Length: 342
Image (cartoon, rainbow, N blue to C red):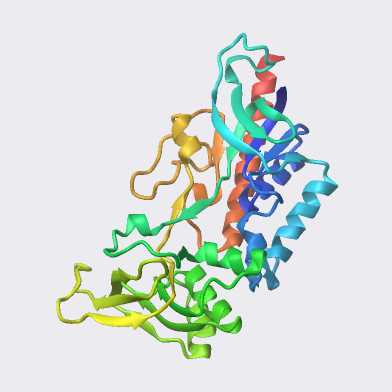
């Protein structure tokens, strides 16, 4: 199946939704959003806590409430979207491929259960794939490989979307915002969060989350400590936590064993850019994010990027604003391209 659009947005989270809406407001009619999950909204759908929208809307919303405002606009503006759709590959195509934009066209290869394999052509692409969590594999923690080790976002999805409580005695490694929020969430669901340990001397989360999610519930936060061994065969039985020096190396003799059946990892986020690399978009080696200029255009002409696939942002409000900028810039690019062809 072949289709043509002016702009294709990859990702239906806060950045992608804002980009698509802004592109349409800027006069672009044929816009398509591709989202791999079943619903638009991205990670916001599982973030049922409040604190979103203070900068953008001037009021406090939950994640689903924030997302719904943009999903509603997408539907009101009749912006086309395809959910449960996986983008396999993106890139530029040569002239003579049957598209109206000639050698400035971009090709998206995507698949879903309804349409099958699709070749989608666009004059411009907006990358809004978001980010993913660092897993145990990136930490190289010694020990066995039992069940009960999760990233914070996975635990959040289990509880808020699937309705499962992953464990009862919990240790959280890392003080990122998602981990702090899940410390409170799991406590409210009846789990015992025994400790949050952070390898650095300061927290990676917002101060308000430390106060509201840990201090208010009496959950200890231990700085300059990390998990140095995992115990258990079929199911996690406990972890060893050690103090670290200024080079983040464990200090011998400081080991302490904690019994637990669940280890939650909140150890940072990585921009999602496998598609970007496949299209030869330049990647910042320091952040793993796509390199974009002041108009959110990448090193490949006609491909724009925004939100957490460029750099991980603390607030969704900033993600939205960046998405809007990418939408306006992509619309401007398409208009100039059309003028050169007519």
